[in-house]
Image (cartoon, rainbow, N blue to C red; front, side, top):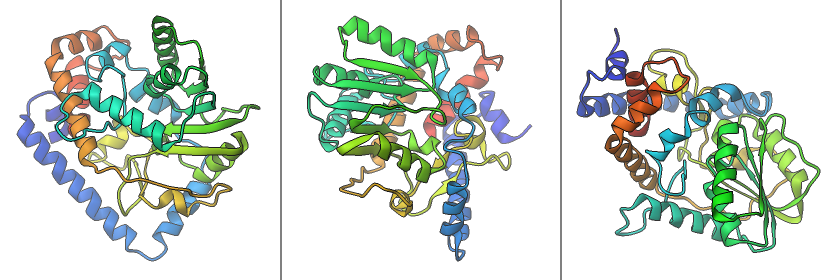
Length: 317
């Protein structure tokens, strides 16, 4: 039994788990630094992306994150169910307030105006979709998710809040197509699950009106893009949470052949994501008995203790 198995079974204290995570992350980054220093490495990665389908392993990604019972996220996310980085302004310690701060800033930077036709790709549990529907009542929002669970949740919340200007479409991004055009195409932390950015940008360009704009939010490494690949025991994240995923770099989107042109971009300090993940972990621990019930009653045959510790490790990492 390896050390990761021991952690998953709950035999390792958090202090040692965090030490192990930092060690694995350090080893991975050192490996990527060596690879990235090799001449032609970036060009090789870009060619691999361009030769790939739009997205890989979409069913795996769906099962790993988006078909997990909604009740689990009731006990781990904030009020708005924002399953992405939040913005912790000075003296803000409340997760729901941090969710609202990032949603507000996102709409400001995307230059959203009431009355717009908006397409959101990868809408998650609807934090941005519902925010747009509520704060821009004359807008028309089309949101795409690959999860029937998420659509059901968003539709229910919209009905509860009297929001009638949103439409949630359940579709794999590989297959999504529309004849409509939009003033804005928005996406928050979906591009990390995409592989062929060239095709993605090309498709998005056909969904934009002549004055339309794409605005997207990604997590990224400041220097090195790399794939999440399950090549061994240490590739735990790729195996259980980001199968087929991609860690973009800050400059990666600008390296892609695209009919779109860059207008502006902003960097958010990674400490905000660290605080977000810690808040998720704290909420999970606070409701650990309820979380166990959720996993014990779910369709996942994996032992509830293992699922709990995998998610705790994910939030720590």
